[in-house]
Length: 279
Image (cartoon, helix red, strand yellow):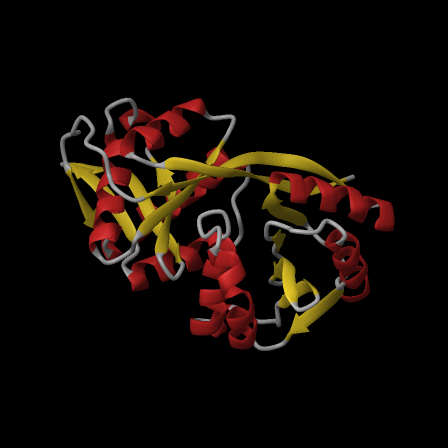
């Protein structure tokens, strides 16, 4: 069993794409990060950690991490890879703020990293990965979907911050920069019913799909079907643009969002976990 590190994102992607595409929905964040590293390298001010673990030339695990971000693991075919990964990371990474991976893999890595370094991790969020191929008809809320405009920059900043607090428990740094990027890419969408009442964004692409996230409706506009309508319309827009699939993640502890997305046509493809450092 051997770990192979890559300096070049293109070479890394060519090596891992077939492995990751076998479960594209579950691996959509890794695939989207590969796409960003290749096509938007200016977004990353330091070199990422890119690696595979292989047995007799066959990949059994894929590992990615960009500076200041969580470690991301693929599905793992041979859990002996966990020890190989932890040993290599121990030599190359000063610390790991967190882990994002399929549920079993995330727990196994957190335990192995704790055994090696003494650093403890706690589960921050249990996630479900969803995939959609066709939008199902739902009761139609009043209003329409449109791309957010420059005039709504401050509104988007407030909504991005509110989404972070509500969904993730904190506001990630660089909100203004993220809003600016979405405005430049025309990837932030508003559901408008006389005024803006809900938001959803396209946040990453894979060879066959696009991921929807940052779904937010202010409290005063909830329980009117706006979020469902917004996500359904954006998903339909992305499918019509040529994507075969749409992906999204939900918090397993939030039954409302899980029900809403399944009603639209999203189907569960597997669970993941987010761990963060504790102590």
